[in-house]
Amino acid sequence: MELPEDTVDDLVKRLRRVEGQVRGVQQMLQDGRDCREVVTQLSAANKALEQAGFVLVAAGLTWCLEDPDRSAAEGYALADVQKMFTKLA
Image 1 (cartoon, one colour):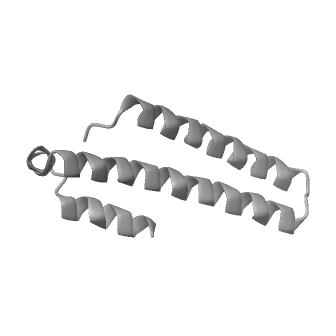
Image 2 (cartoon, rainbow, N blue to C red):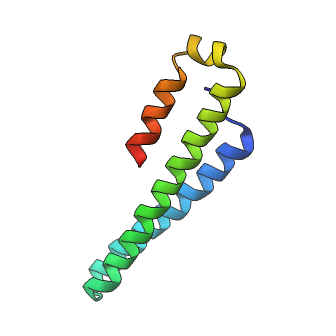
């Protein structure tokens, strides 16, 4: 699957933010922060990961729709990409 460079850049930025959030959660735990605050940050990191997944699948779906023969030949039939989407939902 070929992803546009701007999509890859966006995904990398999103994942770096998530990485920072996870490090922040680790620090919160070490600092003995309130459980509710930790859960809020965990929820935010989880949501950010989900959004990154949706961006990735949307780009894949676009690629499949633009060139269905090529995408199927490379193992990305539309049904397969739809299955990836349902894994995130």
